[in-house]
Length: 394
Image 1 (cartoon, rainbow, N blue to C red):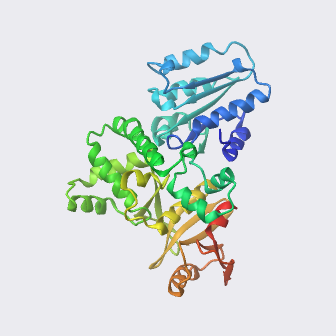
Image 2 (image 1 turned 135 degrees about the horizontal axis):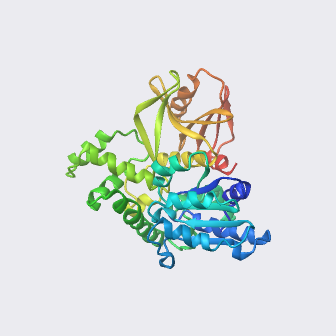
């Protein structure tokens, strides 16, 4: 098993804290493996096996009809006052699971850990019922840094091309070529389609949903509106309403296939209602649906940078600075950082275009231009231009 050290350390940090630990993320990103690694850590910490209760709720072995059966089963395993560690994998498969989770949480000697592959897990009734009593750990597929550490290869450019062609999902490390990866991603997409979208959203037209998904993958990093998507698909012979597009986009983001990024007016210091962008959780899933046609390496690089900012704990927005666009406004408790991402800026006009968007921001927060250019780092009056692969490894 590939050890996901950063996520494992987070679980260790929250161990025995009076909070439900909720690990969320797209299917096959490594949530179940993370639980296995953490359970190994517990055993090494002298926790006895009979005080570790681990259930994968997609297994026929645990065919609970409702939350009461789940709660009663786990409760029956708790036979003394020593600490118990309860792991419920893919808990959203149990109707009204939040009631079972809440019931286990209030047992004094129980530490509860759950996973889910749909953002629905932390919406609505669960968020209300467990408000203030859970910590969410958002899990993504492998970062470029994890990928490099696995292969121990010094040629970063070669590894990056492999990374964006052979997938960031951990299991893809076991696959020998791109055709196997494509088959695996196609299977994964269909699993998400059936288990996390069609049945949950009660969507009957899987063909139309696939058309919307393909359109979204072909426009990664582009400014989009729901109306624009509906109009484009209708023009191309797929008649679809704005309301239906809204439903499908909600389903695709809830299942973590895409991540919605809103716009922020830097000068006016306000969030904007239009011009959202969508980035894929794994850029190679687009190849399973589209092949290599219309591959925009610049937008794919932008996608990779967005995911890394999320991994590093930033809240990320698209920046609007009067008529200019800043690729990413990244905020955390330490302040704000601005990023422009370009595949290359060796052309002087391209460099000036990227610089001016940052130069006109009237504050002193850090500003970066990240590129694939293998050049020495340069400082343009406080704007740092650096190699993106080196930045990804920091």
